[in-house]
Length: 458
Image 1 (cartoon, helix red, strand yellow):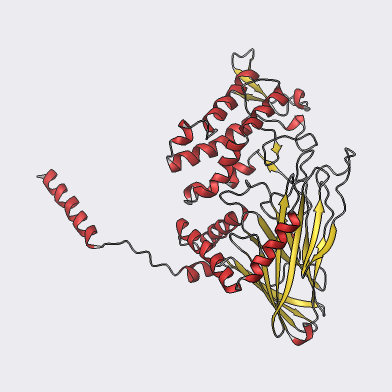
Image 2: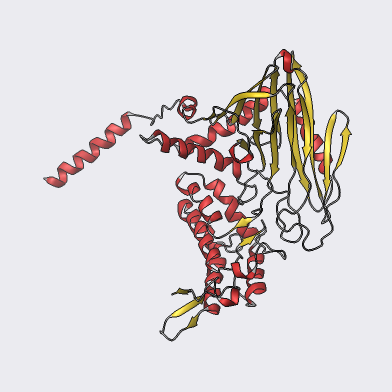
């Protein structure tokens, strides 16, 4: 009788479910995410506190610089030195010099639409501007409205020297050539050649769009080893200017509006809930499917000693949220990087440990997974566990997708060969000690430049 009773309950449940044709999720997304928008009650005055935007490749951070300037610091993830450690390079920024001194202001980052609005009060009037980086196209759009007293406020290009911020001049490498400013019709361009080859270019155009209103378009393009950055950057500007801004804004919003619902979570604690959604926003700003793997900076960049990928915790934890948040497409930026560069992980093992058929990384690498020949990865910061740990992320990508080809198709996917050969490196390095246990040398042991006798005890 109990079995029959249970069956009746199950059948009734299915009949009840069938009565509702569709499961409806009635979320007013604009209002729901709007309560977690980031609000600045005063203007941020440094890069680290600024208003950010990104599309996985282009990035900008907005903040006040001095008493009469707003700055949009610009970045693009794939602009690197292409020599020595292949570290990230500075680009520069766009400034808005106000007529009067800045008295105050506010800012709001609209998460749902991935746009910001800033209000600036000066001794001469007021400026309002909106900024977004298109979700797909390589274009930044700034729309500014000026009161009468600030009509003469001026946008200015603020270049930065194209130098290796990590290695500097200690190796005596020839410096990169000077940037070249030019006009391509009505579009301004800053071309930066590289000594190692290729170039990158920033192009911009300012357009009057009504009384006291202006719109600024910015694009950044990198080419390596070929040239042609100017042509491509100018084409991006011309394409954007030829389109209705509302059409660009609409397609930009469409991308973001499709992104958020895949990760729906709500919790009673508004602070925790807000933190989650802000991180979901920043994750999609930092990297995307088909775009560079996330290093320590994403598409944002300033002078720093951390201009590459760090494998000792950083890259692993940066990607942990993609699996449970239902955004495996973002996780692919990491797994595809490993697939493309599998030969380099074997090269690292051979260069560092002089062994064949093993795979590893150094403490830090470039986007191609290589250690480099500068100072970013000295011998004392080599830890074979870093790479095996990173491959755990690849395993999570597999387990959450259950795409068995990630294990079985070893020509396309490097996961299994790299995992096998990262562990193979352990077999080369382990030694049996007097206590009968097998040990790995510590990254702090004398052979790696330290006098500690700490060991990994297996």
